[in-house]
Amino acid sequence: MQKVKWGEYSFKSIFNNIAQGRRLKKDDQISGNIPFVMAGTTNTGIVDYISNPVANFPENSITIDIFGNTFYRDYNFGAGDDTGVYWNSKKEYTKKTMLFFAISMEKSLFGKFDYGKKLRSSQSLNFKMQLPTKNGKIDFEFMESFVADLEAERIKKLDDYLIENGLSNYHLTENEKQALENFENLNWNIFNLEKLFGKSTRGKRLKSTDRISGNLPFITAGETDEGVSAFIGNKVNVFSENTTTIDMFGSAKYRNFKYGGDDHIAVVHTEKLPKLASIFVTTSIHKSSYNGQFNYGRNFYAKDADTLDISLPLKGQKPDYETMETIISAIHKLVIKDVVLYTDKKNRINQHA
Image 1 (cartoon, rainbow, N blue to C red):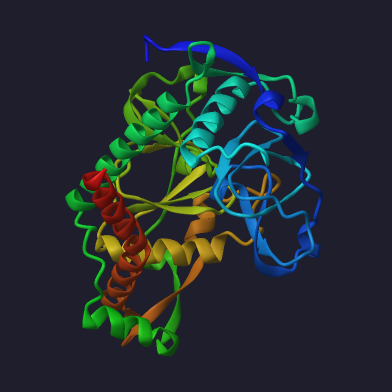
Image 2 (tube, rainbow, N blue to C red):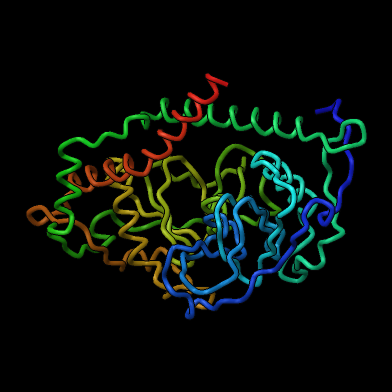
């Protein structure tokens, strides 16, 4: 990379089509098969699948939202008015080239836009991105090679992770098949969270200016990075792995690592449960606590966790944790199946390249 020569290119010199999506309110969205993209990073900005007669943007496009979040799209889609779309209908850029463009565009926009200063595609025509050059022209060969190497590196890491964590086997056992088939016929009961796991614990406030850099994940309210706001070295109360956090908005998350938490976090002590049963319990907590009843005006606290009732499968008069484990194990395999098949396919392609 240090030997590469770089040049600056305007967005409009790369794309002959730069357009803005159009507003489509949530209440007006009709269920369908068209991915509908809006501002945000969750699910790469896909908020719904619709059938409304919206502008159908082409595959092999790049979207940039009002905050500068940039994503490559290899499928047809619709977009809201908070999203700009960039493509070229006269030059057939490859997927790897478009991915490189997307990286360069986001880098050039990083930190420049927010709620107070929103990006509109019409303002971006003369924005510049840096691209590798050779003999005064864009070095497409280098971009192709760079993205291919980067992809191979990521695939290798993903493949190693799957093997290391025992996730490469996606074949369902008979018990797992049976558990999924019987799911609709399970007996369920309502259980109080405090009676199941004892009193929940509230984290303690630690201002960002007082945080010392370290290795301990520190959890605060929010969805970004699963609520992990920093890695600290402060002496704080360390919560056990295999527990569940509920933030001030009622959003529950399973934690498979030791961590600290601020005063907007309640910790439910599920550590004595088997891991997969704890994950099942977390989903039941989230379903009960994250329904819009908690917000900035009414925060969720540990005392709310103690009064929370959740629905769980029943065996006799107790929660059926064994069935919960089997169900989560089956779901993990179903989710990971496409990932395993994807890595296998990529590895075969790389071997024959």
